[in-house]
Amino acid sequence: MSEIDYLNECTSRDVITMLVEQRQMSIADAMDLWYNSRTFDNLMNPQTGLYFQSPVYIYDTLEQELKTKKIETEKRIN
Image (tube, rainbow, N blue to C red):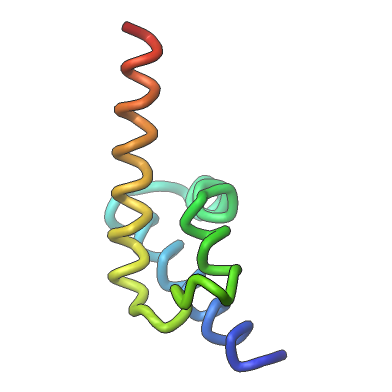
């Protein structure tokens, strides 16, 4: 396992934990949300450099993604 892979695993663990605690999600739902997010895809792409950021920063990025998706979904419904 490379250093970047290790950092990504640790960050994923922390972000999933934050989803469970902050959003009162089940672990399975939190994992599903995380691993299917654009933020996770960006984390896995070493060219983005996102792996250098803290788990809190990455969680905030995920929250922004979720808000944006909600807004996009609401616009399509209206």
